Structure formats: C-alpha cells, structure tokens
Amino acid sequence: MSTALAHPADTRVTDAMVPAPYRVTSRVQETADTVTFTLVPLAQPIAPPLSGQFNMLCAFGVGEVPISISAIETGDRLRHTVRAVGAISQALCASEIGAVIGVRGPFGTDWGVTSAMGRDVLVVAGGIGLAPLRPVVHELLHNRRQFRRVTLLVGARTPEEIPFRGEVASWEASARITVRTTVDTATPAWKGEVGVVPKLIERVAIDPEFTTVMICGPEIMLRFTAAEVLSRGIAAEQVRVSMERNMQCGIGRCGHCQFGPVLVCTHGPVFPWSRVGPLLTRREL
Amino acid sequence: MKTIADLISEHKFFGELDQESLEFVAGCGSNVHFAPQERILTEGEAANTFYMIRSGSVALSFFVPGRGAVVIDTLGDGDAVGWSWLFPPYRWQFDAEAREDVAAIAFDGACLRTKCDSDARLGYLLTQRFARVILERLQSVRMRMLDVYGAGAPR
Image 1 (spheres, rainbow over the protein chains, first blue to last red):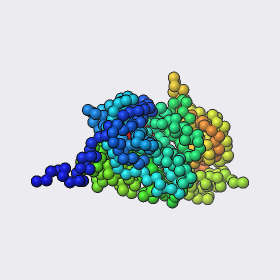
Image 2 (cartoon, each protein chain N blue to C red):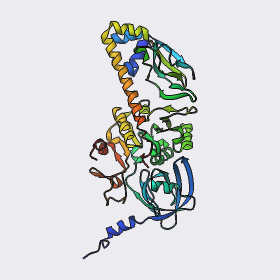
Image 3 (cartoon, rainbow over the protein chains, first blue to last red):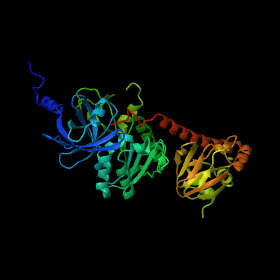
Image 4 (cartoon, chains in turn cyan, purple):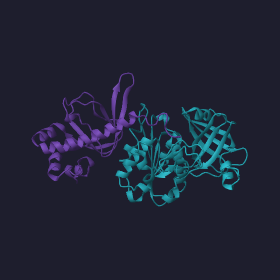
C-alpha cells in the first residue's frame, strides 16, 4: 500500500501547506482597524508574488487567513495590509514589530496588468479592496507611458476609512493618473465626492473598445460597478474582479472556496467578469 | 454659439427627446454660472427652478443642528439638481452649493409646469426622466444603507 505522501506531487502539497516564518519589520496603522505590515523571511522565502495574488497568513496558535499582496517589494520582503474583522485577522493586526507570522503562498491568479498595455485602465476600489489593487496602481505608475488613460476610483465609508490616504492623495497630486474618491458619509472637512463608487463611473470618460477595468471591493459593490461599466459598452472579458471566499488550503485541494464550477483559490481570486458575473446572482451559491 | 436647445440636446437628461419637445423645454431655460461655495438651493424656500449641470460639482446637504451642513450627496457633469419644483408643495427639501465653478442650465419650473399641464405628452416625458433620476438616487441610498464597506468586507 502506498502512502499518501509517496508521490512527488503530494510532496509539493505538503510543502505548500507548511508556513514559512516571517518577521514583522514595520507596521503602519492605515485606519482604525487596518494595518500594513512589512515581513522579512527568517528562513527560506516563498516565491515572489504577483499583484492580485494572495498569501495565507498565519497567526500561530490562532489560525490562517488569505490576505492579498498590497505591494510588490524588492528582494524577499512582503507587504500585506490586514483589516481586523475576525479573531485571526485581529490577532494578525495586533502583531508588533519583531513578531513572527507564518506565510504560505503565493496563491492564485494575478491582475495581468501587462496585458492591458496600450489600453485605458480603470481601477475601481471599495474600502479595503484598494489593498489588492495598490500594486496595480504602482505598476501603472511605474510603466505609465505603456498605458493610455489611467483612472482610479476609490470608495469608502468615511474619509477616515480610506486606506492608504496619504498615498492616494499623492497619486492625485501627481496628476499622472486621474483619481476620484467618494465616501458614504462625509465630514465637514471632506472635499471629495459623497455617494457610492459606481456613481463615479458615469462621470469618467470611457472608450469601451480600449478599456480594461479592474475592480475589488465588497461583492455587492462588484456587481453594481460591473453593471455600470458593462452599460458603458466594455466587454465582460475586459472587466476583471478579485473575489473573496473561504480560502483555506490555497491550492485547490480542500474545496472550501468552491464557488459553483470554480475554486477561488486557484482559478481566482482574479477572474474575468464573463466567468464569475453570472454566478454572483445565483442564490444557491 | 450654441443655443439652449443645442445644449440640452447634448445633455443626457434630455437625450432622445424629440426636437419639438426640446424647443419647448429650451424656452424655459437659461445659462447660469455659480462660483465655488455659492448657494444654489436653500431648504424650505420655494422650488421654482431646477438645474442641469454642464460642468462642475454640486454638494447637496441638510443642516443638522449641532453638526452644521452635512453633505449627503455630490452631483457632477450631466446630473440634474432638484425635483421639488415638480411636486407640491414646491419647496426645496435640502440645500445645494457649488463646490467649484459650476456651469448649468437653469429651468423655470413654473413655466415648465404650465407647459406640462397643457401638454400631457411632454409632462409624461419629463416625469419619466425625473423618475429615472429619483430611482438612481434611491438605488444609491439603498447601497449606502447596506454599509458594504463595514465588517465582512474583503481582505
């Protein structure tokens, strides 16, 4: 009788399930409940991630959660932005400089930014959904001349809850890309827009044949935003969304993140709208 | 130089309105400009005008005792400001203020109401367009009520 780990492929599975220890070397409080960490490996680093991919971050003794890459770093460093919404993410957010976090990954599909070269790019982020899109913006800015119009739309609950506020303001000030921010609830000092982020799309110049859209945010926001850009004539194949499900193994073995015919951890998390859009309105899923 | 009829025919609100109706509506319109921070509408005052924004940004707000003016929505190019002129008691329900230089077309609501009363077809066409604006704003409010960025939002 053969053992379960005798096959080389199974060895890879085992390797993929073992977290690599990383030390927290910087910690930035982005908003009241959101923290950005820089992590450096204590031993063998994981493979370099791509924008849009995620790692499983482990708070030892508590559990693991999937967290997107929030910047592509040089060398072996990793940058992750975590929002404290449950026991595990709260434990991760409580990590101080010097703490050790487990990392598995990188997993899943990327945004495919280079495939949008020569086109207009519309990036739409809702709340902490800006974190997975932040490396996209970095890439677009780094290779600015390779893209036509670049527009970033950001929505948040309040001005204080806009992640990477300083950086978003610097992108806007640079005028290298068009940036528009909107909040659900304004403060007296707020000078940006008030309202939901899909509403901003009708105010953006769109050349549907030459526009690629990248969206990340709460699922309901994905639906409304996708509907808005599709109504402007953009093909569903050119609308990419990042999905979130209950990723656990990260390698398509456990099935926890199954979403109809797709496994979000391996087929996603970045999908063309043509593939997942119809699934999002199916109540059985 | 473009006429009011030319301008409104390019405006999404009046898009697909036939020429006769456009001319009819244009007769009640005029070009206006607002400087930043200039008040456009004041809650409680008679609602005799509505605006189609050509360029610029307008903030809609309520005055809340103890909090001052709370901005509830912002409108921009192509948006309609104000529908209280269409329904009794013809009083504005909120304040509106220019956030930057605003170019708009102002319509005399009383003039339009009279025309709509005498031309039910035009009245229907305009009511249909305002109903669409109201629906879009309602959807926007519903989305905000969902608090989509609250707990349970993505990683």
